[in-house]
Length: 245
Image (cartoon, rainbow, N blue to C red; front, top):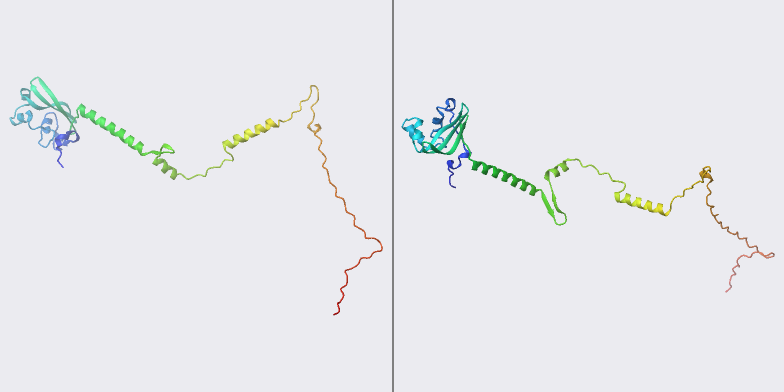
């Protein structure tokens, strides 16, 4: 597997030298930035030429090429260093900005990198949401689509199962009984006695009832015992006679 060059991904790294932190100021910050171990520093820049010739930084305006300048300083915490391409004493093209916070150097992202990072973060969040939603989706030909949540199933298992109270009747049964009662009332309407004007109310006890039909009782005739005729005596069974041989 090929090794990845650190300079190809400078936005994800930082650099610090703790020995320089106590003495960082506007006069020493460029020297601190030009350390050989700093991955953000280009050793082919004009600053390196001026440093080797022991010239002042004012000579950078008369040179052409890559250079580093101190763009902004807020001692002792914040320093901003700019990398730019000088084409003439009055014409330069910015290439990158670096900010130093508490001695730690970072590269400031460009606009394209910011938009790319935010877009990737948004797409990753949306994709994760869709994957999570699809993991809870279920389908059956007879039932169709529905959601099955694992957390809901665990909560249902943790809850004590309460016994469901059985209702005396269902809604359909109650509705059916009401319809039958209404039908019976229409077939057999109740009788209301309406008194005439000026008469006293008739008590319920004096309301004539329909005469009840008497229950017919069937009398059974008693059989008289049969009397034997006079002068006859009851005979017993005939006696057996011995046959002589």
